[in-house]
Image (cartoon, rainbow, N blue to C red; front, side, top):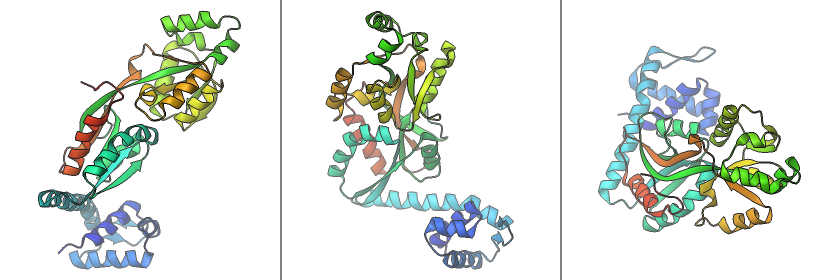
Length: 322
């Protein structure tokens, strides 16, 4: 009979190919890990690792590694399915989402979800899209919220709302770049946003690798300009706050400015107080669709199904995607 704990520990060791690192990742002693591996080798009557430096897998170890994840996934899916059949009073739901998007979306969904299904343990995994896609692929999360299309393979998606990236331009920046011409430049930008008008202006942008930054870089490249970047940050709220202080122009998702969102009043006041102007960009990439993705090759638990149902009912701050 397969000992799944031995299998889990073996898989981590097979991924790390270093018992010290694997034990640290598992929060157990190296001796304990070695015992679990030895027990698994006795169970199958094979040697799984070549105890060399560096550590390598034997042919049997390679074969087991290929099957181990499938076996563990099948175990997890079986428990979920049986739990659903039983009474759906207990279970777990792991949700993957970016830090900023989670702050906007999850307060609209999770309080309702928890009140309806108090026995479901919620686990939140926050990170970048690439890391979340990997987690979804490997079964570390049940679903993820991100912009379509997802990069992960074998993912079924449910669109929930539209998203648009806006250009945020402070009056103070325009006044410095175009002395005495503030109203003229604002009228030009209102009629049609030509990013080339802002080439000499300072920009506060997100770090490279972020989707909003990637879009910004594509816009600059299409316009054949090199922006004057005065600061890069990981946090989109920091970029907006610094823009509010007149430090530079930035890009910001429209959905974060929703009237339904708790911080809307604060942001509206900030926009008015610091004289920030919001402009829609004539660029296809700034328009996207936010969706929920789940692995279509795995059992879809009722916990996941109910989360999607509530999300579709409770997302009020953007027009539902077709």
